[in-house]
Amino acid sequence: MDLLPGPGEDAVVACLEALLDQPVEAVLAGGCLDAPTLTAETQLAVALGRALAPIDLTLALLAQPRARVALAVPRPGGGHACIRPDDSTVVLLWDDEGLGAAGGYFADEVVECLDPATPMAFGIVTDPGPRSAAGATRATVLVAGVCAGLARGALDMAAAYARTREQFGRPIGANQAIKHLCADAATRAEAAWASVNYASVSCAESAADAEFRVAVGARVALDAALTNGRTNIQIHGGRGYMLEGPAAGFLLRARVLEQLLGGAARARGALLTHDAVT
Image 1 (cartoon, one colour):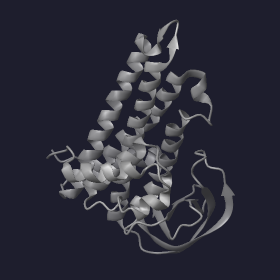
Image 2 (cartoon, rainbow, N blue to C red):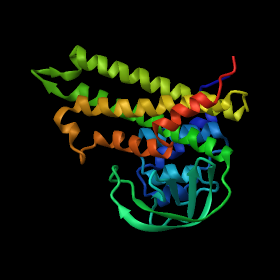
Image 3 (cartoon, helix red, strand yellow):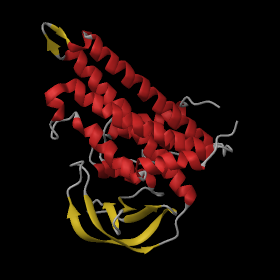
């Protein structure tokens, strides 16, 4: 099993990265999200997370064909929470039955999301259609890919700050405590990337333990995104704890994606449900 991206996957990522500074509409129109395989789509997801790209692009990656997507998930108290761009053309429902299209979404209350860049509303999904377990598996791989990218992006920001921020006449990265934080973050980011790639290749090759590999990838990548997000904030010190500051963005986005994956309890449950093939 070859986990390394090939030339075709590198090409689609390069196409996306060239457009990431453009409006969402330009990225969608550019066709760079139209990857031919799940493994290529996963590399796009990682690139989106690493760049902390607008969540609209992550949601568009879940739809086939690509579109402006509103994604609804069940709320514990009933109803649904929906990440909902104002001009969305497709409503997807992701619940325990799988992932599928819905007729629409009736918003009772527009709420402020933890991630200020993510529009959210509470309400009810209308005309929910049949859900697909395979579609939910694919969505899990892609969201895990974004989490792996968030882990890498948080590491990039933390390491860059450690190299340039000086105290007592030298960069803070020269201190052993900061070095250890960065080294641990690098290990988590690499493990997340490898786990997500393993999951995507397992699905593409219809491996017997593909569902287990997806569960592992989601759990490892989500944990890496959350922990590296906190590490990035810690290395930035007092400046990192400002919600409007750039350091908090990776952790806040990871918290949103955690809910899309059903929370930590679902991630742990998926590991127990599916067995590895030995």
